[in-house]
Image (cartoon, rainbow, N blue to C red; front, side, top):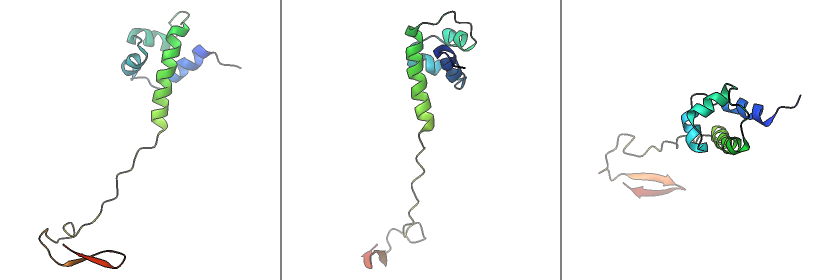
Length: 101
């Protein structure tokens, strides 16, 4: 059974229930219309409404699929390991070189 554009859009919209104000701003559609559409009460929705709604849903779905950036790794510095910033002891900086901190 083939799903109509209206049914597909409604199904996609329902996944973002609670975000209708945001979707309305993105698509320039009223909260009232979005609610009626989601409930199946919008009579014969036009492409003029469906196209911007589809674009807004595309944007939200892409954002939901993007991986979040993990926090950068914590670098332990001599100060973090208990040394003070005034310490002048040599610190191994990698590749066998030293630096005075």
